[in-house]
Length: 117
Image 1 (cartoon, rainbow, N blue to C red):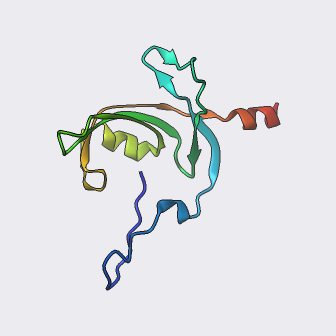
Image 2: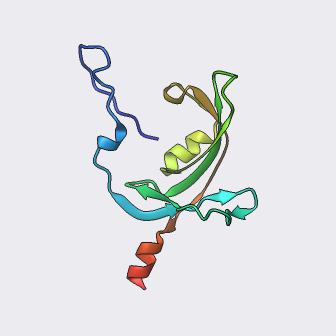
């Protein structure tokens, strides 16, 4: 998870989309897994990892607002974020608590495998 903040003097002046930050793909991906292995019906594309994201993370996000349903989140993550996520921590930025976190190794992307043989 990444965040962007900037000190400034006007309201919402630091509200910038994280996609504007320069990030490099690292050639690793995280497969989309279902309850008993890869999802076969829709064949979704794997999640592409950036920078120092070398782990695959899956967790249940329990929202602060009990009327909002829990959500399963899958993403690439840094090794340190994976370890923190396993501690069931609350994150104000997403208004919820990370629970049931699981991490595994990422894999090289199919594109990279095709290029490298």
